[in-house]
Length: 200
Image (cartoon, rainbow, N blue to C red; front, side, top):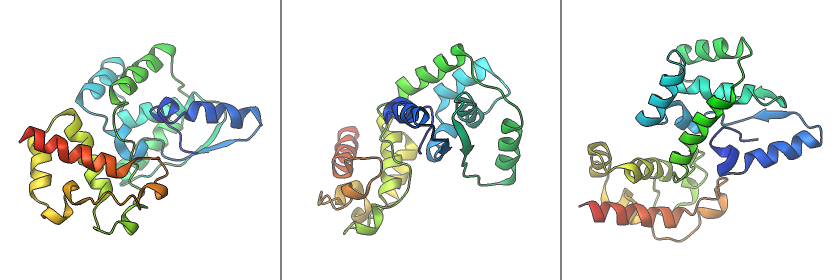
């Protein structure tokens, strides 16, 4: 199942965990760092984590959260390089479950992130989009813009042809049934377009 400290409440993964545990079903975890989001949760979140454990990375916090759940048997982590592989091995080579105060820090981060659109870049939506939009990229940029329309957001959007921007979404809705996160994609595209227009 998809399980991480953000989805514990955002997608009620905690309730799903309890049901599986009650029925004696061991849990194999996917998306432990939420498609990379929890490995780079933003400057404010990272500052909170560093203040508590200066030598730990944001990713290790996400993994230690899972170590605190006794019915998690396997954690499937996507890794991009040898450094990440070594870090993950080091994290899981010892048992280091979270304290209540550390869980409170994660909850504070979740409260700040809960307004994010929970895209995990599965790209199921892209194959049916008549406009051939890179929907995960647009959602990721929207999440960035929702905090602040930075130069980076402007640069990304300026680099796109008009036919590839959020404004090109026709709101046909073909993408919505395929989204495992139950995101209302046309609504998100509309919000993104409105946000960009408001900031111009």
